[in-house]
Image (cartoon, rainbow, N blue to C red; front, side, top):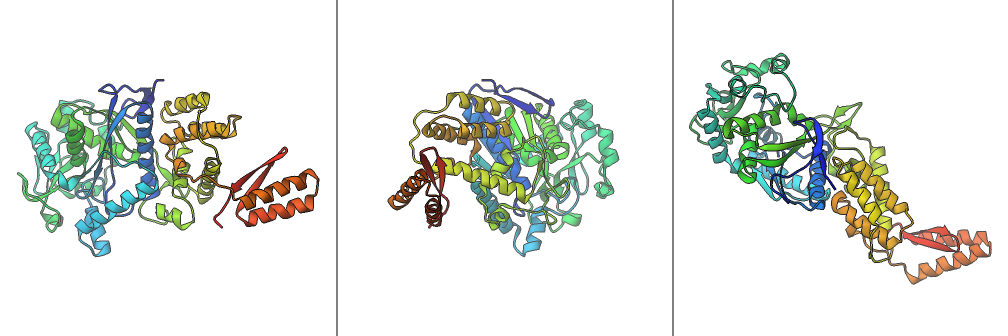
Length: 468
């Protein structure tokens, strides 16, 4: 069955064909480790995880690389503001190195809680200064940079002259729109030639004279800009031509546009075959979730509400990754209830033997239609409600969970104690003799013991609802 994926660059959904048969190279824009990742950030990683799992489900071997930004990302995506790591260090009274280590571990703990598979390789920006400097040198050699007293810049107009139309191809913006939309502080460096030009290497002068993270370079002591790290590390580990690059839609206009320009300018190739982006998690009448304000929610926020963090994963799966996802606690609670219902099915006795082939085909068709997880979940519930034997349902649901990642394989099977089974048998007899008061008494006793009982014709089903 063909796998179709949307490509931001071409603005269309088409059949995915890997560069190398049977293998997929995947780069995922990782976190800037100066604070906790919020639920909106983590939607991007759930999306990338579902993509990776879907590729594996289709029989591909996947090599995934994810960067850790631990230097160079300023509070503005343009070349202004404070370095986010130094901001975090100032906020917490720690060193930038300690802040980076702490929030990298926190990020990895959050992704583990959400059952996001770790990448094949994490790559830290600070571990790849040499590669970043080398790429800037190549851009300089190719006539695509200029140096001021404050920084080495990528010369967008020189790039456009050499590669007409390529700079704005990913975003679809006109270069003139970037100029009109630019803020005054973009020109904080009076020698910066164009608002779209971006720093490849900041020199340790002026407002960055005391920058704690710094390294020697051919242009002077300093530190790399944000965009160069992804170009240097993705091509180092995945090669000059790789399959897929993922990230949030907020990266399209600046970060990924600049990254793509660096690739072309330094390597002579766009490097990335397919760009894929997820939409925002929105709260408060459509505002995106951000690290400032009251809508800064984390997996710990979910846990503090008494909910399983995987309820948030289920919640994300209910909306297509290219659609905005509206957050509310009521919606998350509904997701948690649905997840509990799935766990209840998986906890019933019965060993998986044969699956539900027809439903498995429908599930794959949904996934292969640009990761249509809402439709895939619909197939999950069609399976649950089907007339297939319980063992067949469970086998199929476990297969589905290889992509959904909801932890169904870890659900403990229910072992009904003999005492509870005896009460249920007595209640069945009471129902058959139409002794409704006794039937109600026995139901209440069963529920006090931590079980629910569902009636069927001449039978019943027991479910465990809590530890006793």
